[in-house]
Length: 467
Ligand code: XMP
Image (cartoon, rainbow, N blue to C red):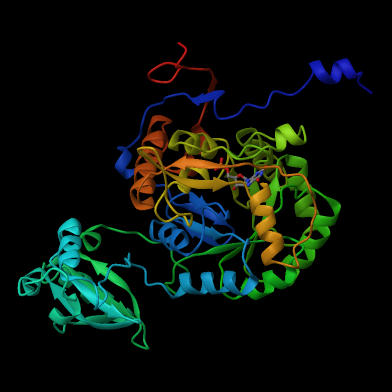
C-alpha cells in the first residue's frame, strides 16, 4: 500500500490539449485528398468527425439538421419535454438532404422592406408565404410596380413553381442554371418547409445519411429514463447517454436495462478512464460507442467543485487502449474542451473516432439561444447542462428527471457570435484535413497508426497579453 506522499508524488501525468502537439511527418497526399470519414458509433457512419453536443444552448432542430448536412451528426439535448424531443428528431428525419432557409415574405410585409431584403440577400425573388401556404413569389421586377414602399408586397405576388421533396434535385438544377433565385419547398401536404436559395444550391454538400437516405440524428437521454429512450428509439440513429459520471453501479444497472429495451446504437458516457470503459462493456450488453472526457468542458466546474478531472485527451487514449486490450472496436467520441481544429486532430490522433463540440458551435446562428449585443459586439449565451439555470429548466420540464446532485457543476456565460455553422464547420474540416496531412496520414485510421506526440508548450502567434 503506497503512502500518501507516494500517491501524491507518483500521480500519473495526464496531458491535455495544451500540453502536447503532433510531430510533423511526410504528408502522403494533398490535404484536399485526406479522407476524414469515420464512425460515431458501431453503425453510425459520418463523413466528417464532428458531433454537436447535447446542450440546450447548442443542439436543437437547426443545429442537428446543419450538422448532418455537413456530414457530421447533432445530438439533440434532453432539457425539453419528451414529446418535444421526439418531435425535433422526427423533423430532422423529415428534412430533405439539402439546405433550406426560412426565407420568405408575408403578404402584409411592406414592399420597400421586401425589396431591401432581396437586395441584402442578393436574390431576385422570394416566396410569399401565409400561414404555411405558398401564395407565389415577389421579384425585384414586380416590386418596381410598387409606388408606395408601405404597400403590402403580397399584392405584387405572381404565381411560381414550388417543389415537393421528391422534386428537389430538379429544383436545385434550375437554381444552378440561373432560372430563378429561390424555390419554395413544400411537404406532401403542401405546407411550406423552407426556401431553397441559389447560393446554397451552388455549394456542394455531402450529408451524413441513414440507409434510407434521411439525415442522421442522435438524441441524449439520462440512463435512468428508459421511457424517453423507448420513445426516441424508432426515430434516432443513436441514443447518447447524458450523465456526468457513467462509472457508477446504479447508472450501469439502468443503462443495461435501457440498452436492452432499445435498438438504436447506444453511446455510453461520460467516462473518463479505461476502467470505466471496461466496466461498461462488462455490465451493459450492448455498448456501441463511448462519450469520453470528464470535467474538460469549457463550461465545466467539476474539477473545482468535486476535485475530479479526466482531461479529455488523456481519457480518450486511456479508453481506446482499454477497448483495444479487450478487442472491442467501438468508436470513442472525445468530449469537452475542444476549441480548435487542432484539438480535434489531437483527439483523433489519441484514438478518438470523432469529436463532440459545445463551445465551438454555441456562437453560431444555428445554436438555439438568441443573439445578445454587448456594446458593439454580438454574443450568444452558452451554459453548462449542470449549471444552475440548465438544471432548473430540466426539473421544470421533466418531472421524471432525477435530482441526483444539488450542486451546480457548470457555469453560464456568453460566447462570441461566429455566424453560420456551415462556414464554421467547413473551415474546421479543411483544417482537420491539413492536420492529418501534417501528421503524415491519409485517413483517421492511418493517423491512429502514425501519429507521434511531442510534449511542448508554446505561446500563441501573438504571444500572451502579458508577454
Ligand atoms: P465544450 O468544451 O465543447 O464542452 O464546451 C462541452 C461538453 O461539456 C460537458 N458539459 C458539462 N460538464 N458541467 C460539466 O462538468 C456542465 O454543466 C456541463 N455541461 C456540458 C458535456 O460533456 C459537453 O458535451
